[in-house]
Image (cartoon, rainbow, N blue to C red; front, side, top):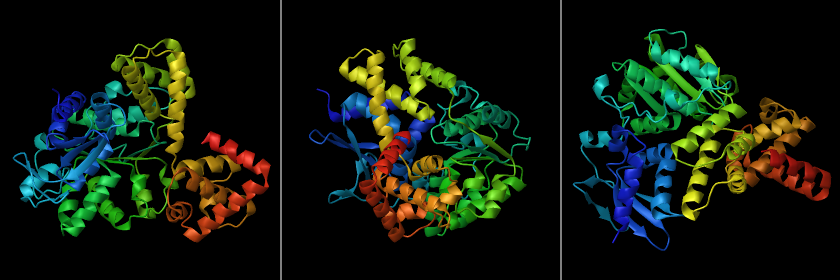
Length: 463
């Protein structure tokens, strides 16, 4: 009889097939299966630290849940518990796992990229790159030709400093993370003596805060200053984090002064970043700014064809054409759509035809709308009311700016679930009282003005 633990092992086999050995050993070998609740469909696992959990959620969430879906079935949930696993024995107190103190040498393995006192050789250095994201499967199109070409040049000729720093920006889901991983992977292949490190801005901040709390700030900065090529993803997340930016500023200066390559990604160009010091913005613009645009139809079609072939799906050309025509925003949507088709097809034994694709596309569209961010809404409002982001977030009391501002607040509260305090912070650092007033103003106008109500509905459809 197959046990839940056997099923979890099957999940790990599926995950292993998508990763290289180093990635799997680092991030999945330390995991221990705890239990499976047949009523709630919850798989509980032990992980060594909070940091470990955050890294898995940030980098491997989709892969893990796809494996759970295939093995345990629909609606399976994953529950993490933090505990130290030593010789396959987990120490707990009561109902919650207790994080025991380990020697520093033991902890270091699970906190990579960690703060190190000595510089390890490049051959033993863990870059935390996703080797599945490389130039071989980063398809070229008009929307990404320049960034792709520049990225290849950086990887092939690291001694040239023409593109240092390289700042790649574009909307979410258009392949920025894939591209920078491809650069890093190729750089390591071409120049194995180089120490390359990929890190998200969020993870960088978590490490920095941890270093400060443990009085290891100097070790933290020393480690990052030893890198030959530093890749920082989503630098817009540094906005408003003054201490983190101060640390990054010193690391950036050291690396650049010593001819080390710096690569960054952002969902917007430097000029549109908020709450970032001017001296940092200036440095972001020192080298090469490369925009990664949403894929055009031909590139979307090529990406879909590659994805369905990779997953062994039998999909006709008319289905691929239809999806490429209707999913226009980003690559992540295309990947999610193919995963949905695969899952529905396997679970229901359904052939994937055009009608089936339309049904899945409709479901995906509903999901995308639930996942809107405040920034997405602000962008849609700016287009609708023909105002700039600066005008939307500024202090002007002109009627057209105030209206756009209040509409953005109302839609953000309706579609994102964020607190009014957070909404106010994003939309020009306004107080929660201002946001509440704006929301109430729009609600009153909806009730009293049918034309405005219809206009708002039309705007929501465009988001």
